[in-house]
Amino acid sequence: MRRALPLPFTVLAILGAGFVVLPVVALVIRVPWGEARHALEGVGASTAFRLSLEVSLAATAISVVVGIPLAWTLARITFPGRSVLRAMVVLPVVLPPVVGGLGLLEALGRGGVVGRWLYSALGIQLTFTTAGAIVATTFVAMPLIVLATESGLRSIDLRYERAGAALGGSPWYVMRRVTLPMIAPQLAAGAVLTWARALGEFGATITFAGNLAGRTQTLPLAVYQARETDPGGAVLLSLILVALSLVVLIALRGRLAEAR
Amino acid sequence: MRKATRIVAITLALMAAACSSSNSRTTSPGGGTTKLTVFAASSLTGAFTQIGIDFEASNSGTTVDFNFGSSTDLAAQIASEGTADVFASASGKAMDAVQAKPGVTGRTDFATNQLVIVTPANDPGGVSSMQDLTKPDVKLVLAAVGVPVGDYARQALTNAGILDAATANVVSDEQDDASVLAKVASGEADAGIVYTSDVSTAASSGTHVRSVDIPAALNVTATYPIAVVTGATRSAAAQAFVAYVTGSSGQATLKTFGFGPPPAG
Image 1: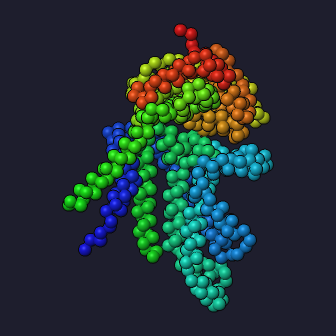
Image 2: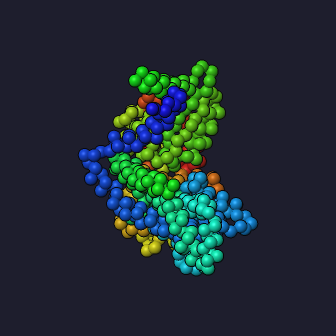
């Protein structure tokens, strides 16, 4: 028995699907398969790919280490300004990344509010470095793990934690043996989403860290530069990003289904 | 089956409606305004914005929309989308590409520009000559290879015999001259190479950088061509705009923004 949808609805759905699928199909059609290898070498694909992995994994690691405690605080502790802080923490999701990059420049750049001290006291300049690219990427990607952790924490029954504490478990023990295992699926999904977002980061990185092959030029930046000099190579690079992201999202769908 | 056909038919009808409505907007019914789309090199941002205002004032009923960016990038956009009426390029090469596809009419050189080294006002890298760009730890920012100002800058460095030493100091390949200037003006980079017009334009908008001259014998002159793009839907207005840019008032504005006159002949 087929469930029927109203006709206009189906038409709109087809338009929507076509709109999303068409650009990806167009990329596949326009890939210069014959000269693929040559084109990939021309745009420095392997360097950009390696750097992208490095930057996105480092950003994910930092996001997990800092983001989970942050989400915990937001979910479990009541303090003045909590809702404002929560909004600020999630802001990078909706903010244009270039605005994030500009903010980072004013904060951590060589002449920035904090960056000035980093530079004069420790000689550290983040702009134009791989570390700077990681900082920019973390800024944009971290909210995803925070959101996932917080929603996980809010969804579980607090009585389990109370029972663990009543039985004499220290807060650290309860967190480790009761709470974390219960929200593990959400944490995993959040970490993967964070990584996927990190992999696609462009605007904050180019604004804050600049664009140099092998140092700050991740795959999205390499695509942007290759557009000018080697459109075919740009299409190929884009397809690598599309493939990577699709694999992540499909794998994630499996995980999320499991979590339910 | 019949239902599927109907769905496809309605979808196509919707798409056709969407296309035709966008067409009717561009043909500008009598008495309405003509909207002119000008694609121009990023270095022309200040000058052309002013010229656009002046042109609109003396051609009532015509509005000018600009798309500023790297000339190479714009040329690629024109070839694939063909939405530009006028193209003003920072290099002959990018104009050649548009001339080949989709084609141009009335191509003429309208301005020249030269290169200059810029540093933050407090000169953190101690750059006071071209040779200083090779000093260790100078953070140099250039436009990427393939962007006209990036290619011209590398040509000037080659003329000075310091291409390798200077490019070893490059910390970022930027997408256009405006981005190079932004990285220097923010104080993050020690030096960059941009057009002389960029410095005048920046100063007029309150951004102050320090400039260091490149010796005339080593400098590179960029010649800017402008043309009406073949297939322009508003070609009369496009021709008028080109005439305005090459005419006396357009030239005077370009001069205030630091551009040189077109090469003689």
